[in-house]
Length: 623
Image 1 (cartoon, rainbow, N blue to C red):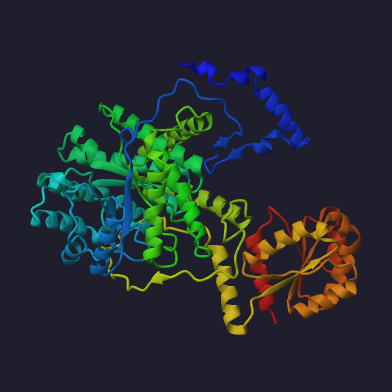
Image 2 (spheres, rainbow, N blue to C red):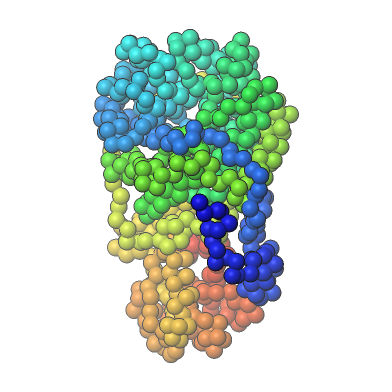
């Protein structure tokens, strides 16, 4: 048998690669720029180095049983119970192994959801064999909390053994209060209500888990990975204490709680976050005197990363998110259909969401290796850093009096607000790229189809007696989508979109790079870019601008060409009636002269694209 050292005999013919050798090559490329330019940073301030050594002597983070696939969950959220049942049966017949019953009023309902009545539950679950290994997860809110009881009653009415069912009941009043920013009850009043429900379901024979610690609330609101983890820990411990306080032994309570996390397109951070939660929860179990057991973690692909524009790119984002959550040991994954931000997904969108997981499991075999990130220097380091920071936040919430008290004091909300503000600034400057929305827009995209349905209207829940700052969900693309909506309105009213004329100077070699940048920049805001040939004659440039029908102009070329031609070009465009003249690139020492010639603004990588585009609309609306 060949030994491991003989696998690569040719390696002995080459010198051993060292970090010092790599650093010399990197410094040559940086050409004097600081090495820190290559060091990334998360929204928690955690540094991410460009290179890590292998982490030695680490054990895999245990999640799913060895080689076991995760549950392929499919959202069931159609307000018409009969149609929802048809969707569920089709999903199960075509590869789904679990159903997420999303009821109206739940945090993840996204504007739709099932009616939380006994009749609707019976219709939705008709002909579904709940004791055949199907995973069932309930997404309920305070207004739809009785749906959990109706599901339990339906199981009993069908003569099904509750112990044979795999149902996660999703009870989570803390998450609902965090989203709404108010509660009609104190935690001392909420805790007995939820534990009574858990004890009742358990007495019927259901295995659970029953209570959900939902980190999606933080992620949806623009929060960071550490904040999401800290919130999950705080809520999980609050439920654990409440269950124990109701007389249930900790060993039994241990299996009554599960977690929900968002998985997004940042693959490595997502993997580290899921791994970190397992380690953190094991630490809590140990502190409680329990032998750690793998926490059940359900994953949703992230709501906030979905875009309404060019929604097919959402398929790619969801694939990366599913890949990351699956490799990091998620027990169940729900892929949000790529058109969910537009409305109720049609059969095609649902099929793509389902098949995203089937391909990764059945063709890529992602579940065959447990914790493949184990030993990866970068991911191990990031996991440890997330653990340390999230544990500190959890302790901070404990000092505040627990999850509910921390929400009342604005502890989580203030931190999420700071992260969201920083995130929104980076979206505006296109440092965080949303393909199809803030970068590489498609003004000629075809309209995606969604189903027509009337959402279920629920009565308000309780008095807003205890108020605190809410954590409403956001989508990061919304500011750019608002500009695209303005563009659509102009197109409908006038027959043409707002336009910017690309005043290209010199040869294609001179202007192509910046013209391409400018086209993406303006069209991200719905302003159609009118391309042109390269000009050297200001008079010909002015004539081409007039013929374009554009109200705005953007000069595009190299710095070398700008030195001799930018000022005459700006004067010619101004004389031709350009209401606003941009120049692609940083002005450096020439800014004063260019502005004197008629240039009113500059567009460049790292600039505030959102503010510039919003200003462009204001200028176009002026008489």
